[in-house]
Picture 1 (tube, rainbow, N blue to C red):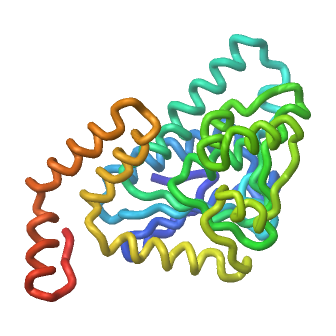
Picture 2 (cartoon, rainbow, N blue to C red; picture 1 turned 120 degrees about the vertical axis):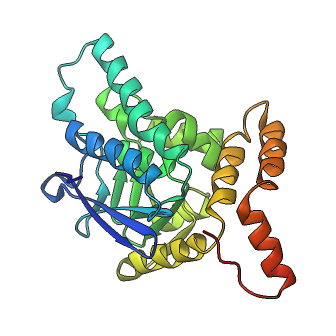
Length: 256
């Protein structure tokens, strides 16, 4: 499938997905969200993809936010529909995607851009990254999961301060408080993300899918039950036999 706003490169089971609206600092509009939704639907069934890296085109912005012009005249009903559809079709889909998604944050990750990064399973930032949720300056609040995911990553108090003040975090501060996993020089960003992705891609994709499911259930009442069921399920999978056999034979496993 061809995408208007995405550049897709697949190498060694890793899909590098570049959000490509450089004239708008890769701001999220309806067409870009649609492209992302269709890509993740296709990637879920694509055996050539084990890990996804999301990044933005250019060196200034991952995603500078949502395209405000598209919803500036919405009423309450259309605003609620916008948030619900976006969460279901993109943000929740990414969070629950059975293959790891790495956000490689180059430059601005604001509003919906930070929400996209937070929906990803891990975040690597370049030293010039700026991250924040400025929605209250528009008379809004984050609508793509920001009020839910930010407290889980950095704590309730810090999340409230960040949302209420609309302040931006530097990359270093974001790493200090747990919002991003690592900070690297911009020229090293994609290489570092690909290095992590390559290590992940060598491991059991079946086990990783179950790990994502269990980790995402960790803040729910049934989290331990999900972990136990997932753990047991894997004993019946070919990857378990290959992994344990390889360990006993003192060789690297070859997961299919």
